[in-house]
Image (tube, rainbow, N blue to C red):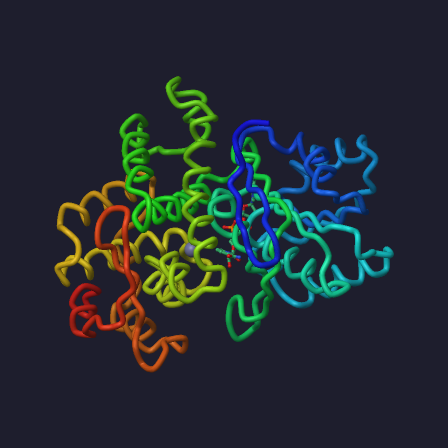
Length: 376
Ligand SMILES: NC(=O)c1ccc[n+]([C@@H]2O[C@H](COP(=O)([O-])OP(=O)(O)OC[C@H]3O[C@@H](n4cnc5c(N)ncnc54)[C@H](O)[C@@H]3O)[C@@H](O)[C@H]2O)c1
Ligand SMILES: [Zn+2]
């Protein structure tokens, strides 16, 4: 057992979050310790399952578990009710019982989808997250939000269903495409800004120790730099995950604290919509959104020019964009931001940094100021 688990505590109970290389090998013992001894329904995707399916199933079967597996097509398009329904057919047709558990092996898409299936089949069965993307390890696998998209919008159908265990085997990141890895770094950097200055510092140190513009962890960790071993990557991921864990522990169902996780997302979501979904990776849009939000905070006198610069440098060091792509019309971007359907009572709620390591929510940011920063 590698490190002390992080723990999320909710009214429904507590669960451990483990981060480290090679942890998938511990899965059978972990499930047994949680009293999960029923049949296991493994949901993965067409890219992850061929790589890691056998490594998960083998030890489980050796330990006496009955495991059945299903790989949905990789990608956001699988997050829909038709795929959920096909999972129900598979599980109900296969005789799923209340004591069984659903395992999600993959990124945020698989986690959200499988979590929703687990939340709803037989009015909920146990759920275990086995995240394989950086984004899922530090963000989507934590906190119990599950769900799918609707043709009219993303994540509009869902349920809160906490996992019983989150096991992040950081060795799986070795095969994650570099662009996906970079998108995950955006959320890691976000966590540093909103709540953990020490994490931000560590990320800066790491970036200076690398040939940063070709930043492709963890390959570079293993081959180019002997100081930073895979274990260090696990420590960073664990630390970034802890930010989400702390926020979720403070506030399970949104409202205050949890809103801070939306730093960079107000403009980020607008950028994703303005560029056409799928053009920018979510993390790339968030990186640009953080740069803009940082500048909004600077204009309001809440954040220093030096902090804006440090954030920008760090985002770039991790291969992330910070400028609005030329093909996006700033006016359209503003329209999407300021007149978003989710805006409550006509006010945009901005998460703005007050220091490196602290942020606050403001709903009184003048439209003209935002217009000025965005350039519309
Ligand atoms: N529930 C939440 O709180 C929450 C929070 C943030 C995001 N999300 C959701 O997460 C989703 C995005 O998650 P994501 O960025 O992980 O995307 P993803 O699940 O689509 O994974 C990205 C790509 O990487 C591939 N992949 C995953 N792991 C791999 C590995 N180890 N090796 C090789 N390839 C691998 C996948 O097949 C996919 O093609 C979105 O749907 C978003 O709405 C949910
Ligand atoms: Zn995000």
